[in-house]
Image (cartoon, rainbow, N blue to C red; front, side, top):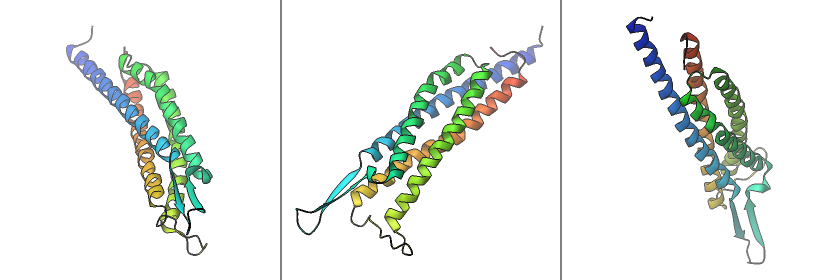
Length: 188
C-alpha cells in the first residue's frame, strides 16, 4: 500500500495533467479558427481599380502571387490537421497516460509548426513589399492604390502567426505532460 501523501501527490499530478490537456484542446480550437480565418480571408481577397477610363481595369487577386497561394494551402492543411488531431487531444483528457499518442502529436505539431511558419513568413515578406516596395529593385508599393486588398492580406497574417504562437505553446506543454508521465509509476 502506498502512503497517503504519495496518493495525494499522484492525484494532484493527474489533475494538473488533465488541466493542461484541457488547455491543449482549447488552444487547438483557437488555432483551428485562426488558420481557417486566415485561409478564407486571403483566399477571398481581390480588388479591381479602373484606369483612366472604365474600359481598362486593374485587378489584384491573391492567386496572382504564388506565395499567397502557398499561404492559403498551408493554412488549410494545418487547419485540417488541427481538426483531425482534436479527437486525439480530447482522448488525452480522458486517458492522461497515453504517452505514445502524445509523442506522435508532439512530432506532428512540430512538423505543422514548421509548415505554417514557412507559409506565414513567405506571405509576410510579400505583404511587406506590397506596403513598402523596394527602391533598389524598382518595385513600387501597391498598397496606396489597392488599400482594401492590402488591408485584407495584412489581416490574414494575424490568424496565421497567432496559430504559430499557439503551436509554440502546445509543443512544450505536451512535452511537459509527457515528462510527468515518465515520473509517475502508473497513470490511468
